Length: 161
Ligand SMILES: [Zn+2]
Image 1 (cartoon, helix red, strand yellow):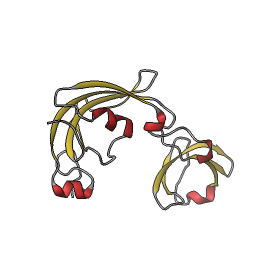
Image 2: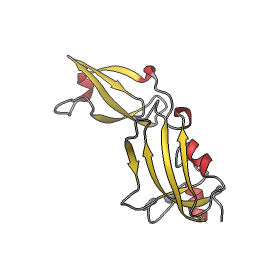
Image 3: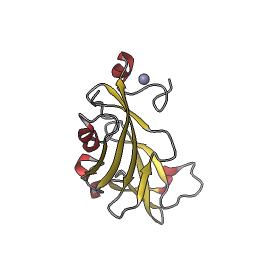
Image 4: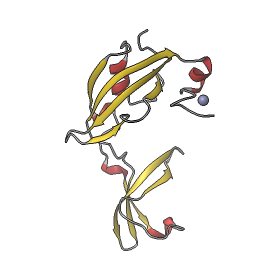
């Protein structure tokens, strides 16, 4: 069986940045399970996995535009401290969920504190970075109709609902 749309795919992976630092890895844990063709994983990696089979190993470098996007200075915003009501102490590096202009949830990170000004950054923490994946295909199966309808995998390693 080859990886194609609507297959449930399990992969072992290690993600490093260009400095060689490990950002994320499935080593020591369960493989990552995803629904192919549903945008569950970043586009550049999904494209590289197409037509692969169990046991295949690959190394993929994904440019920012196929990963978490280029870093955008437009996503920096200065907010007033009063908007963080209920937070005892603000610190650089803290992350908050915020709703974007289109209503979608995004994560913002505090970059700087300056008096009552809180400078937040709406870029994904990995924006602007090339991502280097080492991947091994562990399992491929047909996704169920329900999984395809939901756009994600159920059960072990997937959604529990
Ligand atoms: Zn579901």
